[in-house]
Length: 113
Ligand SMILES: [Zn+2]
Image (cartoon, rainbow, N blue to C red):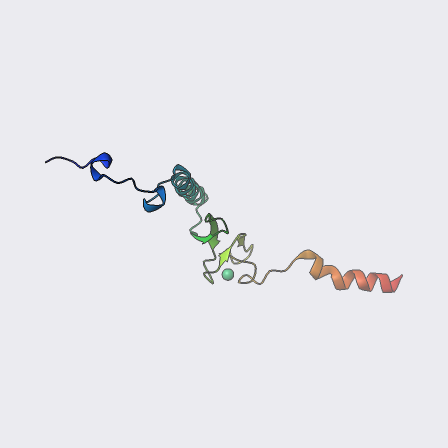
């Protein structure tokens, strides 16, 4: 069976009429798969079972996130609670920042002086 060559068609087609296959797109996919593999292997090494999730960036890229094991939300920072040993986001573990906790104390000290 003879295969069809582009010149056999008798008409030139436009690049816009063809599906475009760009090396950059494949590199982006590979980069993200590699990142995900590396993060998963690092988490496994630490003995942490955390799922990863993605979101699309403005320029068709993909951003990786942790998935909070307690609320399933996309998060960039996980915490391990010192007492209950659970891993989750700040909200789920009911954590607060030091500056908020001591705000009242500083104000009280200023009033004392
Ligand atoms: Zn959470």
